Length: 323
Image (cartoon, rainbow, N blue to C red):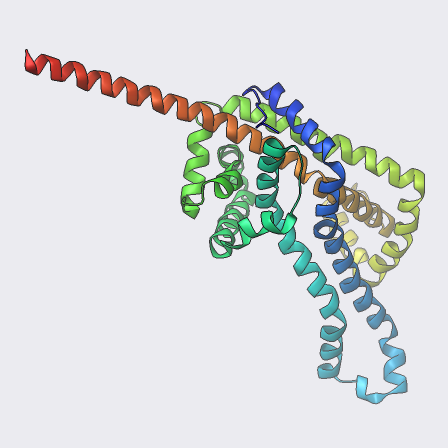
């Protein structure tokens, strides 16, 4: 199949992105299954087993005094959480790799019309692991700085300018870590407003509308009710809400008391949010890859015009010297 051609407008990027995502939906869902669900399973094992151990610890101490030791308790907690931690870390790393590999998959879909050979796309990223970790480290540092209220506006602007760093990393392997940020900024420069609009549209669907729809699905299928009870028990056992509510009331006597049910409902919603945003990561990566290619093509055309102009100037200058 010949290479697909896409326009450089927002509408063209969105329509082509949705088309590629839908045509390869099962493949993308298969690829994201472990990175998304693996993190949830890992966290569930960590907190679930630790919670069970805490609940049955008094009984274990009664049956065997050996458990009545700080060293033994810590060792047991570490042992029972190791399996969940291994699953979580592996899934988390695969999720980070997906930010780059999905861009390569988009390129494959544009060239061949299909997505295949996941290990090859992953290898494109993992063979530059050190640089990739450095890229994520800088993203983490900037994210921490963005928490500061004084930097919120600046961080929001920089987020848009740096939104193509993973596309730059994937397709321009000779660019350094800092170069990825600089290159993304150069591509977005002059296209800030359009990039912002595209980001808002993508974010509205994948971070709000789809999440709300999936939350309704949780309610209708009984998943919400199924999860709320164990979460309530976990909150009552591990989170001192009474102390927090007392502190809250001292600050504001009219403040609404937070109950274990409130926390449990919020946790269930966060699970729905994580699942939806995780499984729609391919859609976002596709759209941003198409946007990168559109802006990169425009930049190359502009660069050629400048070079042609420079050659003409030099040619006329040479003619004047000859005269």
